Image (cartoon, rainbow, N blue to C red):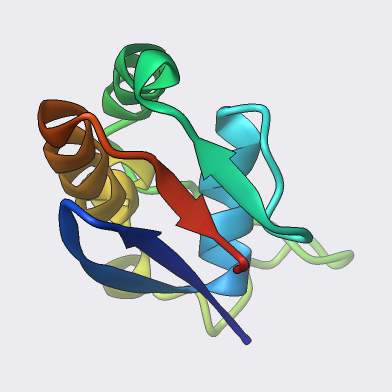
Length: 104
């Protein structure tokens, strides 16, 4: 499944549900239900997302202690890189004083 972020100030942004949920969780929000990010909350949201780690997450070990085969290092994306399209949308929305919504 996917989550669609919308704003009058930017093109729609479609994101895989798991990635959207992880980013929204850092903002204290959820993708499980419709939501809104108001312009007055955007500076804090931008600071939070821009403060995410630049390094990709380390592979998690399974019960045998081996790294999962499907988590090849070249396939991992850093949280900050993953958030970049949403950061751009929020910045454009803040500049235009428009909210960002999802799940509607």
